[in-house]
Amino acid sequence: MSLTQYSIRELHRRMANKELSVTDLVGASLQRIHDTDAKIGAFLALNEEHARLAAAEMDARFHTSGAIRGLLFGIPAGIKDNIATEGLPTTCGSKILANYRPIYDATVVKKLKDADAITVGKLNMDEFAMGSSNENSAFHPVRNPWDTAYVPGGSSGGSAAAVAAGQVVFALGSDTGGSIRQPAAYCGVVGLKPTYGLVSRFGLVAFASSLDQIGPLTRSVEDAAFVLQAIAGHDPLDSTSANMETSDYLCALSGDVAGLRIAVPKEYLSEGVNPAVKENIYAALADLEKLGATWEEVSMPHTEYAVAAYYILASSEASSNLARYDGVRYGVRSSNADNLLDMYTKTRSEGFGDEVKRRIMLGTYSLSSGYYDAYYLKAQQVRTLIKRDFEQALAKYDVIIGPTAPTPAFKIGEQADDPLTMYLNDILTIPVSLAGVPAISVPCGFVGGLPVGLQIIGNYFQESTVLRVAHAFEQHTEHHLKTPPIDGVKQ
View 1 (spheres, one colour):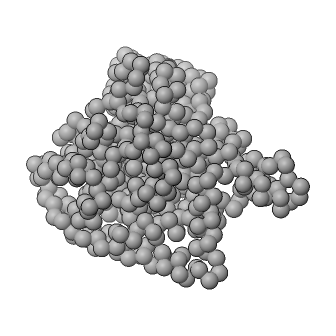
View 2 (spheres, helix red, strand yellow):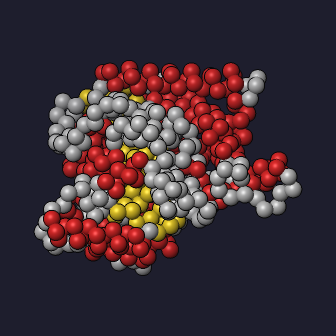
View 3 (tube, one colour):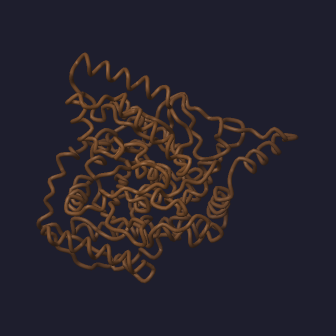
């Protein structure tokens, strides 16, 4: 077992007992990346020299003080490549930002540094976070560590695969329509999307600003609580950041769910969901019943409209946000232009991939004169109805539970020519994103050797409840303890 597959608490115990140094741990992380990433493709850039220097500095500090002070002291982390990191490439998986190195850190990266985490590299992703499979990176696809013929999910597929493969202890991803939870489910790890506004978006390259959220991907719920504890909180640099006190997420992990009331939307277990996935969800509900929880089937009637509304709203915001990439202010500029307009056109034509162009065109059409009321305004009205579905359900129940994705991971290339089918992979995560409530995906079983995720959804800023339920389920099962066999690599 690689050192990076131990929990944060266990790693800190070993460091405190002088059984392990930060240099050992960071070295193990980098060695694991060198051993496995040719098969996985999770990393776009390594921060090797700086990571080793930071590890040596922390070891010296520990030798002097004899104490572990930072919440994430010495823990190796990977950062999704749409989160700004000073001096490190931040490409968003796109050719148009291939030469971009920010001169500042995103607030979450700064908070990780303050907590003494060590960034070992930047993680691959679907271009500008647009995708459900991680096949849309401009550089190379990411492969699922459980079977490299399959996708890891998107767009945080690099983050999920890096954690599942034991390359890092935790990773940061971003979730717009399910891009933390869906790859977490496909790769058999824990993925948490916080309430919109709990974690600062300053330094996150915008895809759809009213939906984007940063969150952790980890091997356990407790590790997710460690990372959330470090990155949550108000940020005056982000106008959408909630100005409120955060909870103690680690103290919430009591393991007690006696008396918990669970809602199970019938729309989340409808005909489109794989029967074997449903069996795993019902088995998970039975496990929670044994712990003292009760559940009832409910209806959230506007779920069926969520995917259509999401792709209009997200694409509309993307068409606006991505207008800044014109070859003048950021990134790559076409070298073959004859005049200014030609430079704009060629830079965007050469710099953006097909999926990004598809969504920019869809969003521009939805916002155009004569179609705004019919598409964009209607989608906003549907979003309000979906939000009310969640408010009504969470007024009666503590959490909502269902599958994270309707099927396990699919083969690379299997849905590449069918964007509508690809979009439907997020059908169970998109409603949560439109409502802005928190949700977590935890491993709950396997279908055909591939992991299945259980999605636990809570009320606004009730991450403590979501983590408590997920942790209780995790402590009662062993799904999260299994590790993927990677061909030719020692476990």
